[in-house]
Length: 194
Image (cartoon, rainbow, N blue to C red; front, side, top):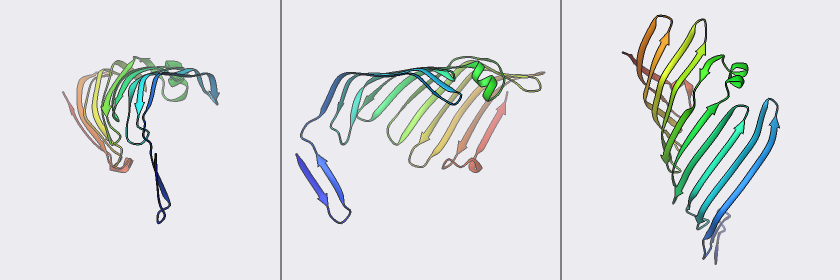
């Protein structure tokens, strides 16, 4: 074991001569509430976790959540700080109708992502999503591809594709959206209606 202390910056570095290996890890929370939010179950299951405790972590994991907002199932893996996962997000229609916007129906969202600690590439898909305004607005076959950069806080949805039904309008939307440095004032949106 080596401990190094830099007196100028008061930093301590600890180099351990071993790595951590956890074959199975399970953690759960049941019946947690805060204001109008309820979590019936939140569970994490992980297998084959390894880490040198300073520069990398690897392993497989599964996260399940059942709540009044959404049910989520996420399966993923880490390989030396590079990760990939697939998640199924089943939004609770009653919660969204009451708290956000009235919906006609919500279908499950599928989120796939891969990246590292600097940047994430992702894809979001759903078959059907409809909201009520003056008249119902229905989106079908939503597919969004994008990236998020954790260091610059830039969001780039470079491919947004969906079918839109609203009143007498029935069209396909192809578009893109960018936000720089988490600043909504930098938002740019381009769209083509087909």
